[in-house]
Amino acid sequence: MVLLASLLTPSFGLLVWMLIGFGILVFILAKFAWPVITKSIAQREEYIETQLAEAEKIKNELSNLSKKHDEMMAQTKAERDKILGDARKISEKMYEEAKLKANNEATALIEDAKKAINFEKMKAIIDVKNEIANLSIDIAEKLIRKELSDKDKQNQLVEDWMKGINQN
Amino acid sequence: MTYNKIKATFPFLFFFLALLFSPNFSLNAQAEEEKLDIGGYIMGHITDEYGWHITTYNDHHISIPLPVMLFDGGEFVAFSSGKFHHGHQAYKGYALGFTEETDGSIVKLGGNYADYTGEINYEEACPPIDHVCKYDVSITKNVCALLISIMLLCWIFLSVAKKYKEGPLKAPKGLQSYLEPLILFVRDEVVVPSIGEDKYQKYFPYLLTLFFFILVNNLMGLVPFFPGGANFTGNITVTAVLAIITFFITNISGNKHYWKDIFNSPGVPWWLKFPIPLMPLVEFIGVFTKPFVLMIRLFANITAGHIIVLGFLSLIFIFGAMSPAVGYAVSPISIFFYIFMGLLELLVAFIQAYVFTLLSAIYIGMATEEPHHEEELATEKLKTEN
Image (cartoon, rainbow over all chains, first blue to last red; front, top):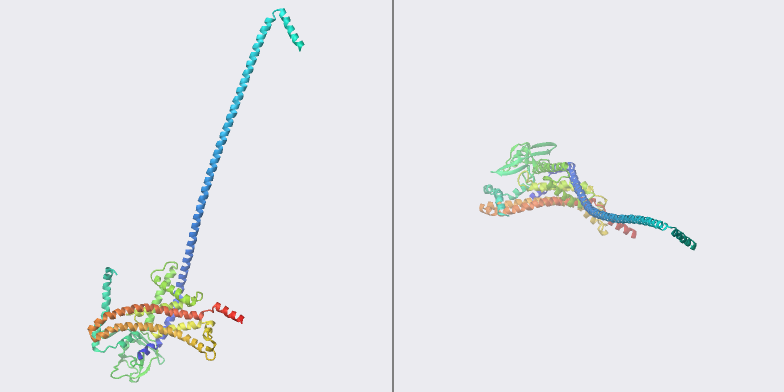
């Protein structure tokens, strides 16, 4: 019982020292240690949280970017295809046009040639006709001269012509 | 465990066992001379003392003398506790208490011994006691343990705080990484759930200090040699001071709602309050029993642990006194239980620090709790309905 009493009796000196010592400890730690530590921990927690959020954001942005990139690629491809198609069309058109033009030119040339040929032909025909006319005149002259060598015949002729005129 | 591991740990284990067995040898000689006082031996370890006893070698007590400081009769007296020579001598009329009532305190001798310095033979002539020195502020073993733990805590946390200051965003390193989980544990599992996110900041420094103070001192108490081994947190004065601080913080920060709950508890039939204020009385006593229980719990847990550990070790001495052979036979069992209890005490050291802090936080939380919004709404609704 005495032993228990000595265990359960508070001692004055220890009480005083404990109050002073623990008080000082709380003061020192509350002033120099805990604010720094808790603040730093909170700061780091916040930092980690913001970093995680940012990482998430960046991840999303990246996926967006890659989506955009894919879209752009598709668009570019479509555009390229379109440009290529257009170019082909244009070239085809140009080819067609050139062909047409060439055809036209050829036909025109042929026409011209034909015209020239016709002209030349006509010219030749006229020349031949003139020649024939001249020849026939010459022949007729010669014939007339021969016919008109005697008087009778000249008279006959005049009579014929007159007959002709009168009948008219 | 692999063979290599066993091989590697064996020397240590052997050394450890040899260390534990060693008291047996010194004991045998001692046991023959006098009857063992196991109760006194255990009490000597768990109560306070004026010097720090290290060991006894060849019947010589080896201890670190600590300063004795007294306010006696209006004057301040200070001298080394070594002057007492473990209770065999008096110094200037002051001696260690030698009767049952004065055991563990310093007495001023009367009569011829009033200013006596020198040997006292209690068996021949017991000197008269004038008075017991009440205002004794000596640096006893426990005060010394307190100062050591304060220095240790300051060193630990100031150096850790410095590290935090250097790089608040760096990953914790070394000591910092051991303490940060504990600090976070106290914050996230103990303080914030008990007090609430918005109000905990004010009480957090105290509760953190409380937790680490109890934890460090519990652990120091488990170290069987200087600077550990003092039964500091198993001392009722220490736990009383901690409980008193919690008591004052709780009741000073208690709001209207807290006092209303004590003197006019809601949800209690009126006849328990009106003619005889039974419930208010019970609640009011509860204000004092809460810290009282805090005090007793920590004190009892740590002291009981120390007593059991010492008891298991003493078994060797008790059986050794019967016959050395029995002592040797018992010692492996004793040591097994000693180690088992030591590990249990390690767990208890954490649990008690946790429980003390948790309950302190819960009491503070109860005192600062705002009335629930839903409750208010319900009472308002009742009023309007009536």
